[in-house]
Each structure stands twice: as structure tokens, then as C-alpha cells.
Image (cartoon, rainbow, N blue to C red; front, side, top):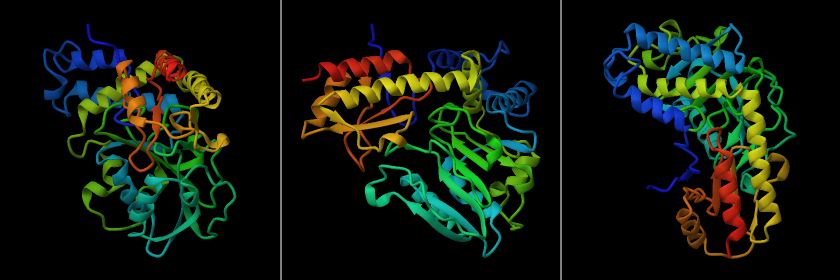
Length: 354
């Protein structure tokens, strides 16, 4: 019998077992229609209804007000690094960005094509081991961009700043992991492949009054207004990816929703961080007050054989624990779908490692 593996990958990431089984079944026969979901028209009633239900689940689980549109797009969160400023900023306008890791740096680089970008704080000098707290924002700021959780460096905004304009949040790696006051944000966006589903679909929650704000003559596929008007159906959407998101959100709802999941996530993270603190072999490179509930990097306290530890863990069914290539060490991504059993198994392995 194949050994059960716990996948600690930062993304694409672990999915709930029940969701995988439902997805596998739908790939053969979707809801008894005698056809695979992979071959059904996105214009057919079953698929249109499934996408509508998914949007309703998002609105319910995150308490999204009616004055926001929920879009399912393609191109990953990386495409939103460009789409957001091109749809929002008028020529010469200012957007403030916080530099807290690799993905925020990429967002900054893309936004500079479309407006005046001010980097109002950065943790780069300390290898992004903390979230900057005290910084001045531009008085003429249109929006303030934050990456709410940083997968590589393991930091997370515990409290969101108040923006002079409005907040834009890249929540790719902690969406649905904790309660969020959506009304504090003009735009929230997230790639699916960490806490929602598989790679291939990106969710954008955008305040309706911001759609078309830049007044630019945009290419059709890069225009929020087009996608909002067509309910994400201007072209063929990533149907199967949206279906897996649907099943994942149904799973989350059945567990008690975001509030209940947040409590589970805090319990899992506490167990792992306490072992890192207790165990003389390991240490955390992250400021304690900014430690992520989703991505937990750790390193040897002294020199050690990283490959040996990774192989030791893999033999115990604990896989993809290698830290990002830019920082090394180890990283345990413990997203919503990572069961407590997986974290307990990792802690046990750390305790028994010699």
C-alpha cells in the first residue's frame, strides 16, 4: 500500500482529500450528466450555475458586500500586478507599495509601467524577516498595495494598515485562512493554488466604483469592465479549476467557515512554532510578532546537513519541505487543507531527528 504523504509545498499546495475525490469523479461524470466536466460547454446551464454558486460561496464565506464584483480570471496573481494599476491609475497618479518580499517586488516593478509608484517601506535590508509598521504614505495616494502573506520569507500582516486612498491586497497565500474586513479594501486578488484550489484561476474582488477608473483604452482581455460585464464569461473560463475552488469552499463552509478555519490554523501554527522554539537544532528566522500562520520557514540553529534532514522527512512521508531557493533552509506550508496530523507528524520527526 502506498505511504500517505503530507505535502508541505508552498504552491501548488495540498487540497482536501474529499475535494480530490469529487474532482476525480467529475472528470469522468459531472453530477450525473454522463459527461466529463472537462468537455462541457461553459455556456451550458450546469456550468453557468456552478460558477454562479462559486461566486455566492465566496461572497458568503468572506462577507463580501454587494458593491463588489467577484471575478474569476486567468494569468495568475502575477497578471494582476499589471492589470490593477492599468485599470485603476490615471496618467501621473500615485500608488504606494510596501516591499515585504519577492512577490511585492514584482508587483512594484509592473506597476511602474502605469503610474508614479512610491515604495513607502521595505524589509529587504533584513532579508524580509519582518513586516514594517511605521511608514509615511503619499498624501496624493490612490491606493496602498500590500502582500498580506509572504510565502518565501514567512511573514504576514497581522493588522492591515489604514490607507490614505484604499487598500489593494494580494492575498494569494492566506485567502480564506482568517477573517478579513473586505470593506477595508478596494481590491483583493488571489491565485487559487494555495488555499482555494489548483493553478489556473485567479479570483479578483473589486469595488464596483473602481471598475473603469483609469479611463484607459485597454485591450479587451485586460479590462476589468469587460470581465465584470460578462460575469467572467467573456471567453472560456478555467472551468475545472473553478469547480475545484467550488468544492474546496463547500468543504470550508461545512467545517464552520473562515472563523473556524482560523482557529484550526492558529492551533497548527502554534504547535509547529513552539517546537522550533523548543528544539535546540532549529530556529526561526522571522520576527515572532510577524510570523505567518501559513508558511513556516525554519533553519538549523547551527550548521547542519539540510539534504539529510529533508531525506529523513521524506522517508516519513513528509515532502516538499525544502526552503525557497533564494533563502535555503526549510519551509512548512500549512494551509487550510493541511491536517493537524501532518503538522503533528512533522513535529514528531523534528523531535526524533539526530
